Length: 136
Image 1 (cartoon, rainbow, N blue to C red):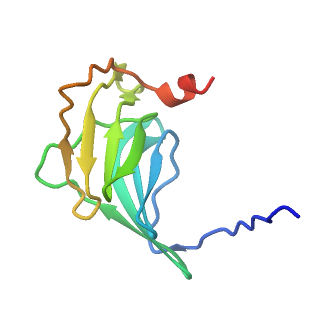
Image 2: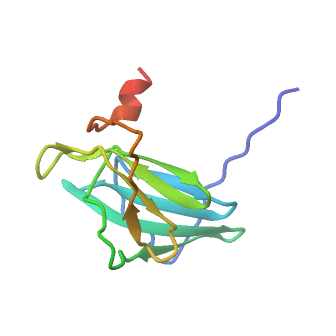
Image 3: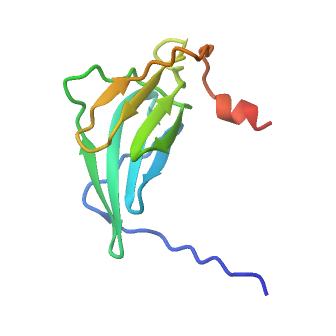
């Protein structure tokens, strides 16, 4: 007999990220979710939200960008967990102006600070929506 998957809606504890499209949500460790960017009401965002998962639900907190240069607003980017940090790549701002990005930023999620990540051996072309196009 095949295993059964049970899905339950997680209750939001406190303020939660506003509805959006084109964002990423990355699991860091076993209980921390990081939401980055996206688009809401024709505004491209560069905000970050951290959610801590518990048996009661998800406690959300908006993370303020620190003094380091925050990344430009973006949607349709990609984000992955690497060594308990979040690496954000690509995406673009397709609302205010047509910009696609070829940059990477690394953040630990705790203070909400993001650092541009150099990749000397990489030669990426600016791209947006690359994950959707790559999967076709």
